[in-house]
Length: 385
Image 1: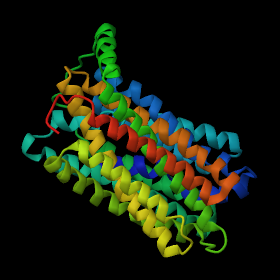
Image 2: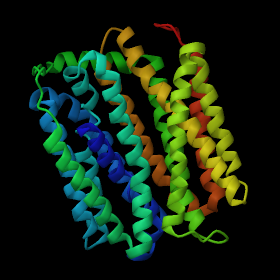
Image 3: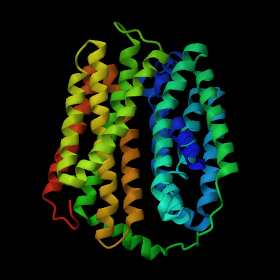
Image 4: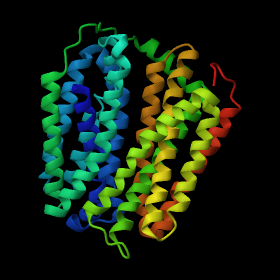
């Protein structure tokens, strides 16, 4: 339950400014591309810090790192709500992203060490459920509160959720009983990192992570602006309801996992990429129901790709002789770097060419992911599937 609360807080706060982008444009007199920095700087800080947080946990311990991570993330959220200037807001969001890294970097390792094998799947499922619920509710809460009192009320409200979750983490999270500090030597870390950077399959998977999530975030960043303008004129709260299609992400990921067990990862990932492309194509239609349908199809396809590719990284690295932790960190680094860079470009695409520009960017990125997934089919396999 502590990790459910931690996952909810972390991922609710990560994308909490996404529904507020049009409001931030008006409040600080910035461009749409500049407003997207509030999302991309947080994901960039998270991605970079993930490379440090994992090894750091071997020294400071899992529990302390997770507790302080959630507490610091919530503290920065409170400061964000009262940020006096645009540059202060951006700096706080970047620091918030760095603070977040302590949870996703070590949560699964903590569960593997502390939870009995018979309950491990259930406990892991609760944590993943918290991250999924957080990603959706963070956007819904800020969108709704923005309608009531503006962006400061919205960020303050989601900060309160973070503070409450942080308190639960400090009260409920059991201290580590089976953790034994074992910091790897620099030479060993370099050897393992070199191994996971030379494997062509892992490099392709890192590329899929960066391009797929970059396209995914770009579409949702652009959708917020599109739905706030004519002919839709949806408020932040109403536009935020679109994020309910995130629930299909859980369905897409679970279904793809089952299909990968049956037909192989090399088959499922390209199919998932094709589904995302179909979803982006549907959003080019003007009727609102078709836009929502397109977002739903794209979301299901993206989570299918991400769910299978993320698990594939660990399996491939382990079969290659180790470095699983480094491979997972590099995958997540690529994931959040893609989210930051390509998601941030959506504002520029929207300003220059409207929705067609955003769809073109997303379609091109998903197409690159598709090509990389096809390349994977030709890489010799080290494991089944």
